[in-house]
Length: 209
Image (cartoon, rainbow, N blue to C red):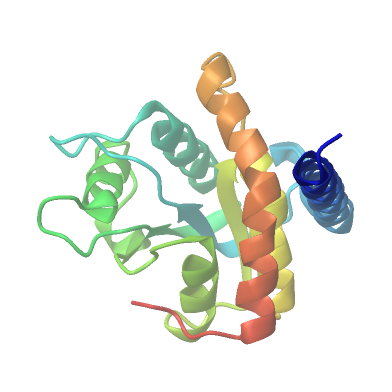
């Protein structure tokens, strides 16, 4: 065998081994985050009351209508409000551009669903999950809340809250599980997103908004 071929096989073997180790590390981190927060994700009938439901933003369409995934989150928050499990709803998302505003769409949807405007708080600088949680604490003064998102997203959000000293519970939407491809992509994405969780928490970076 040519020496160059030997070197190539060695390099490929090292790359493959690193990839396997990296994948195993991601899986271990992901399951660790889920284990850490599993007792904080409960059905609505077991959810303790909290002052505010923090609804994490997601895609809105060009006309401002929330996507199916965001509607699922908002409908769940409305249910919490109607059951008096929360007193107000904090809609947190990316609203920095006049051409794309998640929080405006969230506001209009919540008000149309019967939530009084005075009980709808908006955070248009909730660019990502970490920023939303950090700003909930530092900008809105919240130390206790319910995080509302799809179920697969909650462990990471609750882990961030815990690291920030926020007492948080999770209410998970599963009404969009029928969107199997999008749901599966989001579920898998969480494993990689946990690396960002570690970086954000350890670096203690400020919110970007």
